Image 1 (tube, rainbow, N blue to C red):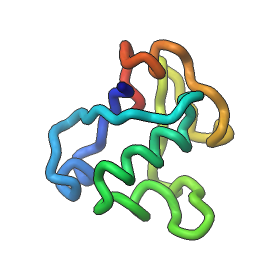
Image 2 (cartoon, rainbow, N blue to C red; image 1 turned 30 degrees about the vertical axis):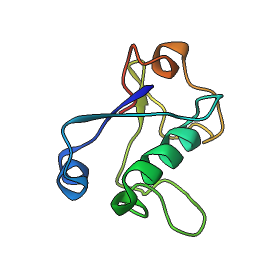
Image 3 (cartoon, rainbow, N blue to C red; image 1 turned 135 degrees about the vertical axis):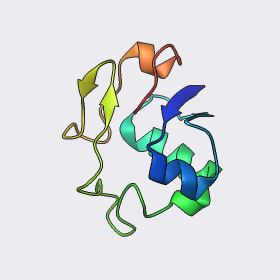
Image 4 (tube, rainbow, N blue to C red; image 1 turned 90 degrees about the vertical axis):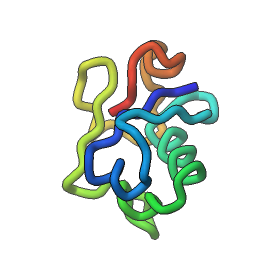
Length: 90
């Protein structure tokens, strides 16, 4: 399970707590995490990434293992500490 920390406005929209857990497809990537988040919480579809091309919304940043990964390719594998749930994807 991957831990995902959601900012306040997305927590309110999804009516969840600060952190959720999702089962992301392997290899764990930004895209596989966001796919899992959108399946588990369909009301978030289109809020994190664009509907048509799945590009990251400009006002959102992604962090993993203490690093800003917002500009990483969406299909790049994330660190093992995020993939195994020791650290959250933010």
